[in-house]
Image 1 (cartoon, rainbow, N blue to C red):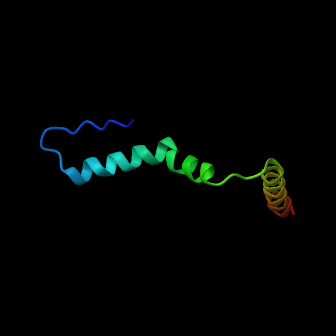
Image 2: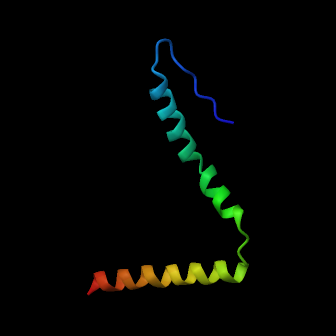
Length: 64
């Protein structure tokens, strides 16, 4: 659970902004999206391989 201490006389918008920033850094939202739908391990592996191939092509193109 995130706890954001509000300082004396602090604007609520500023505290809300701090909360949002801290929430984004925890990665909770991303994790919820991943858990929302089950993906088979073979599909995850295929996606990782495709990503690696894409990155390798970019690096090869930089070398030329």
